[in-house]
Amino acid sequence: MPNPLAWLLHNKPYILSISETWLKLHIKDSDLTPPNYCVIRNDRIHKKGGAVALLFSSFLLVIPYSKHSFKSGNAELILVLLQVNKHKCICIASLYIPPEDNVPILEDILSWLSTNNTNETIILGDVNINWDTIPSPTNSLNINLYNFTQLINSTNRPSKDFLSGSTLDWIEVFHFHYISNSGTLPDLLGDHLPSFTHCLPSFLQLSHTYTSTRHLKTHSPQFILRCTKKNQLEHTQNLTPGKCCYLLQ
Image (cartoon, rainbow, N blue to C red; front, top):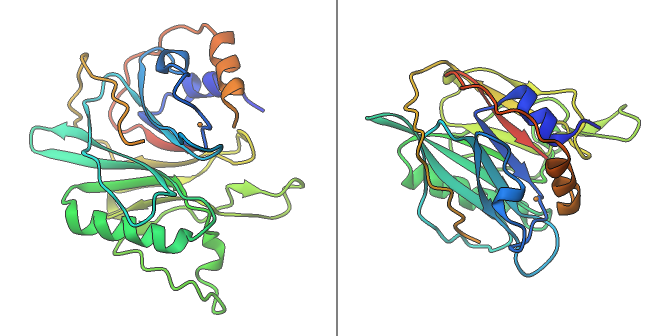
């Protein structure tokens, strides 16, 4: 299995969404963040599992979104605005939904975003719903995606023998014509394959000053800490517009 930090610095994504981080508040952001990246976390405080983190290049101007309440407190969600230029933002959502009651929770979040958010939106997350079953005539889920398009059609949770699998990690967007490419990568990190989407190049407003903010409420924290402390790699180079957004499980 590739080292997560080495994988990150080799691929150099603009934005990386990590689901099921399992992190707790006593673990510092500085223990997790590689050079030229900053992080926003939504840790699960009162029980094990779950939680999400959003890593992004420090050259991007990322604004934490205000907090919002949804019908269920079982999902971890991070919302940020990526400033593209003076007149345009992209809303980025990092999401984890546990298997219980996942369909109504997902619909609740999609409904809110489609109603209250006027920006282009990219949702990256493990929703624990197998997309492979949705087009099936026997599917009874009847999920309302609220005009979002789900981009990932390939397996990202393979079986142990790699002969079968499921698509639990989704990337949803409002306007798919802004996406040049998307899919999964063959790098098994944990028990999931990373999913990605590549937006068409556009001018991005960059900033060398930023605020790392943990608002709202990530594998094993010991594993992530071991990997980050073990590798003192050189700083990444400046990133260029048109890079990928990755979903890492």
